[in-house]
Length: 435
Image: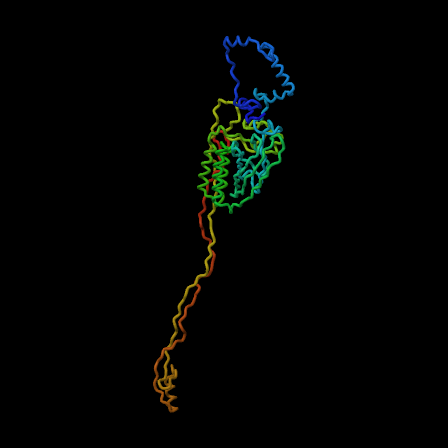
């Protein structure tokens, strides 16, 4: 017998020998002529038989056939009446009535549960019927309920650490296993990218991916819980000095608005720590609405929009009045060291000259000794008796580099001291809840 994908739709189930598009004929109302014909005997094998005899004989033959067939015919056609135990999805016999989960372990060196953002996993099946995002923790085994067996493609959005560092991520093919069985986890290792090596485009792309994720997010990414995850992504991204704060802020605000929208059809949290849920329950599929038993402990707190309870309360839902909680951080004046080289200037020295007296007769330099020179010349039969003046260079002109100040280092103020008011969180003014 063919198994229909919907175990509750008896009309669409096909069985052997009976086409699925055939419908039972509605009994006809016969007239008096037909009633008279019905009373006439039937001739079979040269003998007359009443119609009751023929019906009885036919019923006996049919019963014998059923007994000889070991009841196979009745079992094969049990689906006609909706009695057949047809699984809701295509599973092996051992998987019938079992919830299926993906068991993952993301390994991310440097990831911190308190200060880092969660990992966002995108779960998709081959036919596009399963397509949602969920927030999970790193460095531990977690299970994500998917409801049916098969192989799923899991892609990731990089978490962002408190210092603005991120990770190189990839996609992974993961086969679903039974929720109540211990299943080996599929390990995925993220390679850390230090904050100073992360580009502006990398950070803006993560902010955009998060904004897209909340549109198809489960309860870990919707309501107040989703808005908190988005805010943490935005805060950590902006701590990276390479971030485009304006672009990130724009995507973060858009994502927070989307997360807080009323999504009555959002999947309830189906992510749990597999180490705490080895004996899981088999009622955690999409129809479970998160009430899968007290043994299933979720890693994340329930989101603000709790639709897991079927109980109605006439009391109006409490509306939080979030008031920003702030603190003042003092920043001292900032200085930098400026080095000054030694300073020099050029000094020009003119040429140095002097005037000398030259004897007109013998050509000797007789400066300051003119009379003695002439007297000596006469006594010795000479004729020296007159002189003239000449200007002669004693030192040529030159330029000299003269130091006017020594080299020194100077502390220069680049910003004044200032106080900054920062938001540390939010607190409801009426009930005291914080986020």
